[in-house]
Length: 608
Image (tube, rainbow, N blue to C red; front, side, top):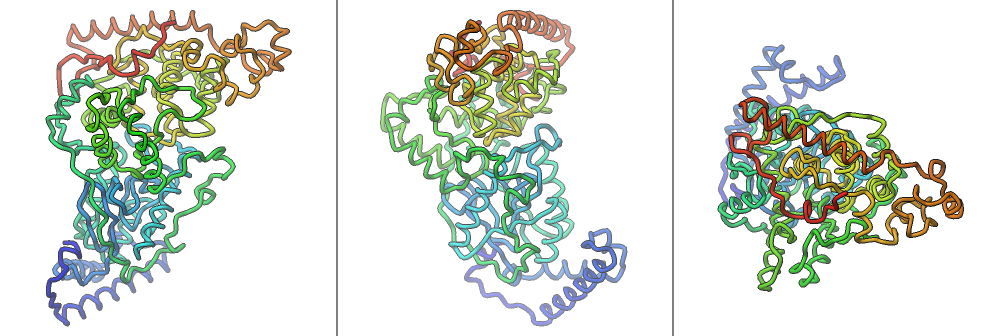
């Protein structure tokens, strides 16, 4: 029961009950100090059970504590969620990922998750696959820390603060649940496999300690459980199902936030750590173009929505992948880390769209982009092994390579194709690239040219993208590799012609690959075609100052189309014979998947 639920009630607490609680607490504290002196660590529950009298005191203490009114426990506040009820608990902790409670947001009506005043932070974040810890680059980690600093600042303005716990979520939450006499633990539901596993352990631990657990679903427009097993592989069919789910809830106002009470702060004062403390050097961040935090998210959102005509006529396929300044909102990192509520953004967009009879519609509209996000989240929650090929009923089994030399050349912008290398340079130095740029480099790595497994691409994006999101990242890579959702494998992005459509002079390439800045427009996308004297005049000799192409695009794409054709035929044969796996419309369905063919993917592809 929350402290707010008890507001206004007359609470009569028996003095003898209080006295016994204090006595038991002192006994447990003495044991803890003695144990720490012997073993230099905090005792776990199994350590307590090994000491009969202490365990009896522990059981009695929890029995009395849980029987007491909630108002008598020390309380720290949980911040407001835009789409969940406000909770004030004895000690709440958001543990949305091992590195951070990155979904924790500041206390405003736009906050997308139920953020707590206590979060758990460690040195790695998220997972590229089921339970596997993935690398996190400095730009992304810096964005996370900035979000936490912004949350802390806003909480302090309201008389509270953020407490960052350092260590593994389970151990730290167990410790503070005992030390702070927690009666209620709240956190945002997280659908990533690693997070689900972690949260099950946390819930079990809390139940063992007699702590009530409350979770909220506010990171998506609807609770993912609401989609059941009717998730369709077709975006258009999904939209129909989405409309049947009813109205999207409204964002909540900011609640009153209680103070910290008598909570004893952890070592280090529970402050948000610096980037250096987390093992990164500030200079590794290159350019911080997109500061983290809810206040910046709201500023960017309002700036984007100020031009109502732009919002009403927005078509994602008609935006430029190689504009020198972003041609879209760049709100994805803020949605990913919970600094912007998808619920708030959705209703803002709907309000503007209703003002015009000619507003664009999904899948190309801005609302459509939020629904693409919902689409992949729903699939990830209802598809086994969604983040990998093996055991994934949606994904075709294709004999990809894991050629490390090719993968490194792609990751390090050394493919010899300026458009591809410029995109990868922007990704590495800025942490964000346009979605069509992502399409181009993903197609190039997989079925277009290099024939490298899409799972390898997922891992690189997971490290370098500010907005790396397990569900969207995995889903889009399956799509672009024609492994799931989209099956027109013969439609390939040209690493030369595609970029020329929106930037004929190669200004984007010159910005990110300065070694090519003097190359004539005629050769900027294909510098290997320039005569040697032209290369020398441009101060960029191919093979010396800039790499030669890693493959012949025409030959590679032709060969890969044949490989894809063979893989598709094998898949069809296995399906007809009742064997094999992959490409069912959802985890529990036997229907054949249909590539949606909608949106930017097929419309903007350039055949090679």
